[in-house]
View 1: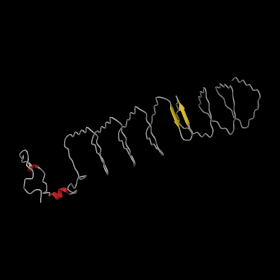
View 2: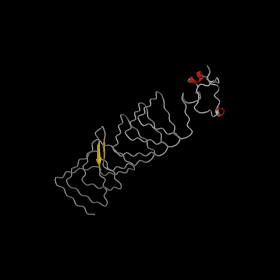
View 3: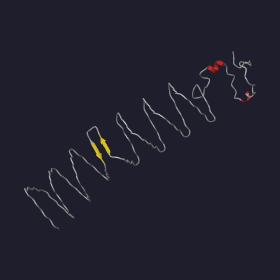
View 4: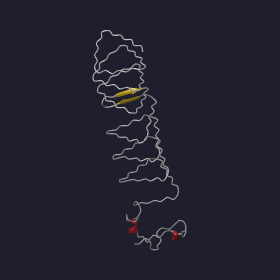
Length: 219
């Protein structure tokens, strides 16, 4: 039996306002067509909802939503998410974020990041790191770095260390041009002080052996 057969199915508590002619045409749908999953052909799902104004929804207890397939959300303007307690996100597959504007994060507590495999970072602009305390770096090869004050600026720097041990109590170096080449050098000094305004040496072959050695040069 068709739905639209001019018979009254349910009596209304109020009178019919008589505005049915203002509604879109129903195309004379029958119950079989309404109950069919293809009744909303042309929409993005089997259930469609259109809200022209504001919508407020309040859930006083818990809410659980299980979606067996995909979920897509499009927000035309701002999106504010406030979580009063803990938040946990588990992503089994890949995770991709694209931020076209500015990104600012404020973490008031500890921040722990664990990378189970390789981590690659590509920065096209400048990077500035500001640490309120000291910095500690520990790698899996045994490299350990800790510092309270550290400042380095490089134009061109190439370094290759097989074995390098340095213990500096006080060290101050100011070099305009320095070129040094060693095949083998062994040195042990208890006290050494050098003050030179200009010094130039060219040695092709040199050998010294001193039990007690003292020099005084005045230019």
